[in-house]
Length: 500
Image 1 (tube, rainbow, N blue to C red):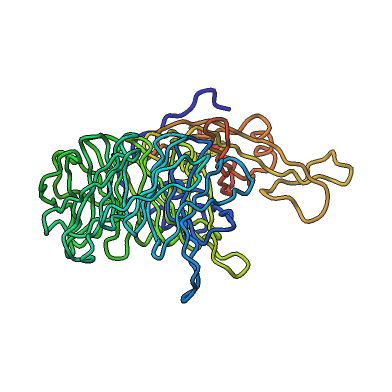
Image 2: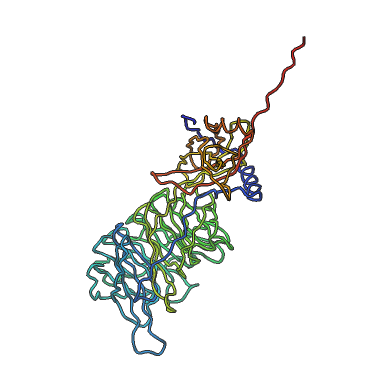
């Protein structure tokens, strides 16, 4: 057993590692992803609301989501906008409350600046401000144009963006108002070339960033909501549609969208924007939006029911995870770096209904085989690769175990193998172990030497098959183990002939 953990050094050739990964997969060795993915997530049904379109979580114990109940075509019963306030850590089913009725109330957005103050907007040019604990019957304020994308940097300032009444391809607008006393705010029309605005984020009361596209170009607009003027759109990427944006800092924003068949992200400085490098997600077909609880962690999602978490300053190629059960994900809120809540809709008992799921967006890092282990005598050399988010560290152990095949009385060892025999008596024996540690994105060869029991079995039987197991731990929690079968072989003694 090694008393000193091996350090992991940088991978010097990504192409070499990927080539090895392909060979190992073909040979049946387990090969981990470069980035750890979340386990499959299952959504929870929220009865009484057709679909949840947006969610805000002012704390880890309180989320408020808005949705709609749509009346049948031709019915005299008006549609309803409903809000659902719930504890994401609780398994109890919350009861929706109607906060608005009207003829056209699909879509919308919500922001909750405190536990007692939420502001919602819909696609009917209405805004509602209410206490989520006692929603009552808030009076909707009509601000004249349907601007369904909302951001509120303070309890007294919100900004909405979107298309004007002329439709998708007409000039786009913003409106800024005090949610506690909205009055009759006047929308401001941006430059006609600003394109379709799909999302907005306001990292301060004097800075908002909206993203969308014009033609085939993904663009952003940075403006002061207290005096928007006519800011010029800036192209961030060609052949790119941007659908979501989050700005954890006034100098850092992350936008997501789709480029061809890929979900992509672009991180940029809104005070000095320009063409930026895109990073594609594995397993996503177009990101809808993004939330960034810190400057080094963002979670994006898409209508294909996927979520993906990454470091926007070094995104790599993060792997998306599908949320089982949900038909669509409309919104995600992350009140902390270890908790996110997603809302949307799913089919339940033949009817479409609201759904939510709360999860930890960050999986612990994991170490895996970067190449087939090599053996020489009583030493196994294991090349490890550490996968996870940038900044994470893999810490764990490698163990070697063999199975002793025993005589009927259980005292005599007849042979050794890597797996239990189909018949007869047997016992599993630890024949070696060592530890390792190292940061994500790096690789190292770790040596495991047989212990006394292992060396004795090898000396006796000359060959010993064993199972190598890699276990990674983070915050006291062990990740899934990865294994490989190896065969230790006794070194042949070299005979030296001494001249007589």
